[in-house]
Image (cartoon, rainbow, N blue to C red):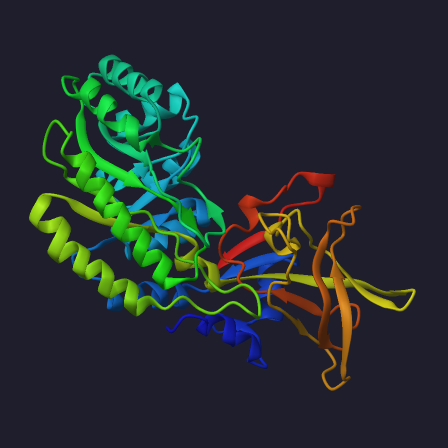
Length: 406
């Protein structure tokens, strides 16, 4: 699947997901709103990545992008590992056939209970601070289990063009690169298995040149830090940050130069210096983002002082990102389509708004769609990642939507 192919399917007059028309999926879901994720598109995206990335590079799925158990279960047979960010995500990952040793646990503020869960399961804890390191050691002593750990590093560089910057400068994420040697010295005599390093600098980047430069600097940083490691480095997580196009002016990420760059870094730089290292790329949004849609139904159509509003039974409480309230500085529409029950009625410019009592509940602004009627379906694309679980589902007490993997 070429990047953007899932997005192009909005031009399919049947508007199907997994080969099933949306009206039939609505009946299967028991009504609207609902999310639908296309199993075949997930497989195609993983195959696309495998064909363009080095064979020696392992692929880890960032569960936070879409933790639906059925999605995680499906991907457990397609990827090499999982990255989780909470005890709840860890349980979802451990319910799959994925070996616990291939599950990594990152994120600030891990509780003592979550760390004990991870140690007991044999999950790799990616340490975010010296305090966390001490808690992991204490959990290991209580349980009689030798913890598996890596150090998450806050790099000494920033990546421009990322939707969310998660490295460089002051951060709640990871240990500052300049303080990592000190932490490694503290851990040198501890009863734990110190595997290596995790560096994640940013997310949602569509510039291949910027990502290649960031990977180069990440490898250089890991090699510098490896000189202070008390033993051989056996795990290197290079992060991810691959973006997908959400808006008209976005261009799909060019994967070929990234694959060539990673091949060079692995073959010429990392392998000679760290021959035992399992090198991992951690991707979430890039795997699942274009494989899902959010489907909601028009419950009212009204004109207010010259502006036409389509009021739907969904909203930002299910799909916060599409409303522009999940990291956008300037609000831009996600791709949107309408499934008219009566085609051929022309087109109109409308605002698509949700059912919540707030002006923030805007799913599409001033978009041209087929002339709509009450009962028509509205489809929000690029909804496979950071949809339901990234939204304020309890706001105003509306029921949660169904999720389908088809």
